[in-house]
Length: 91
View 1 (cartoon, one colour):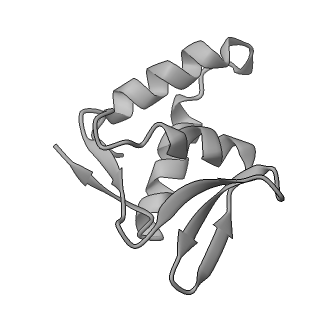
View 2 (cartoon, one colour; view 1 turned 30 degrees about the vertical axis):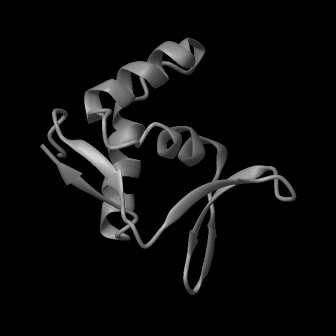
């Protein structure tokens, strides 16, 4: 599991952007674009190089209290995003 004190950062090869036409966040990269679902967009918006994983979890649990504890879902997404090289971690 990812250490909650790590600070995820978006890989410089990607750029997060709201795409009005598609009404969602996307990750742009030289070869194309990745369309993010709503949950992924909410998480990626909080990856600013300053927030730690624990900050992201707390922010989203506070923002969506009716969804229950989102911790495992957030860890799952962050792991997948790391494997896809969308982000990396710093302490």
